[in-house]
Image (cartoon, rainbow, N blue to C red):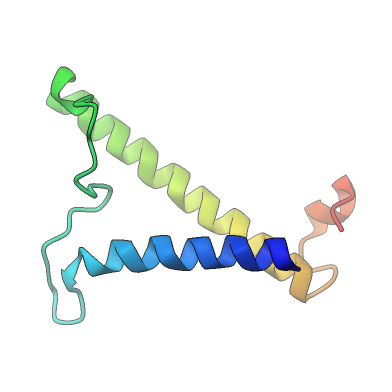
Length: 93
């Protein structure tokens, strides 16, 4: 239970930081570009073509969405026994 709470706290902090950089989302005046937190301290995107950067942004969004589905499945598995049949098959408790 403690480890699960730490993971949840980390996710809340990360999401809060992402929202704080977004601007005014409720009025449709967000200044944030999805997938761009302005964190490229190694300058890796400068070495790539624009098409390749867009490709990697799309891949990152898809991976993020898959991770969100996975976390929702874990929450459901812990909250509602039998709600994630795949975890029953592979032995997740």
